[in-house]
Image 1 (cartoon, rainbow, N blue to C red):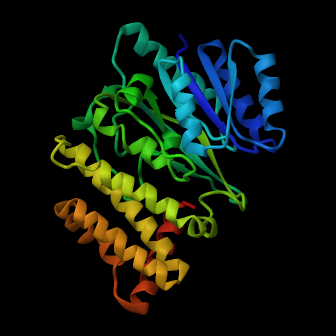
Image 2 (cartoon, helix red, strand yellow):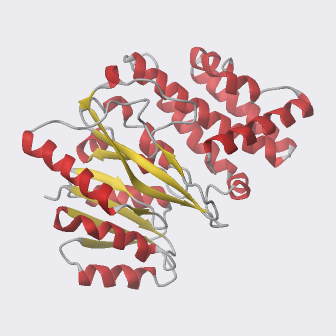
Length: 338
């Protein structure tokens, strides 16, 4: 059995996947790299098979009909032999020194028989054309280099969240929580991080800049114009996150507060994209989204709706929408996302 399974979903990734896979090979024989070719029509399958032939003990290739990013992750999880599980997108990469430290921590957990459900590390917003690279760190939120529980979690700043780029899960946790991402849907990385959280009991934070999250391609899913075009997929993911929230079953107060805060920011992103689209149809979809939250859980609705972001996203009239957009732009500049 391998220590770590790394799934690399690939769809027409010929232009950049080599950088990604090469950075992962540093992990050596303790790691299995599962390249999931999601119905590519370029040279991605041939490049993947080239790596599998050259590194037969490390790289495996799985070919499937196009099912989208989420289905590629599902396939990777079904085929994973590692004790721990990581997703690295084919246009991203990892840092070798940080990688080695992470593997060392995972080895120590196995050697000592310590249950570790989730390892968190930093990631870098590798924004194209940006001289200063924003780093998502968690020093204010988590104790460093020790196993801890939700009761030990400190303070999350606004804009500071656990994302797919920063997390490694124990593989069995993902199977126990029946993680199943929807097909042909973007933004499912939010479900990947959010859904397993109530099953996570033990965590470890390593303050290293491990994951380099590339931002800058015109066709990238986080590009605002692309997000507006795909707004129905964003809404689908948002509603799945709402359905995942059962406050009566999330008994740990700090976990519950974190999940509410995460849902708050997803509601904000959905709302602002609907507003920025400028269409009456999408203004109605925004109302419908907030009504969906209210019908699911009125207490949760009022908690988010009366918060700072909830109030700003629901200001009335054209002037209110302009204020919402202006506030979002300030957030973008301050936090460095998108």
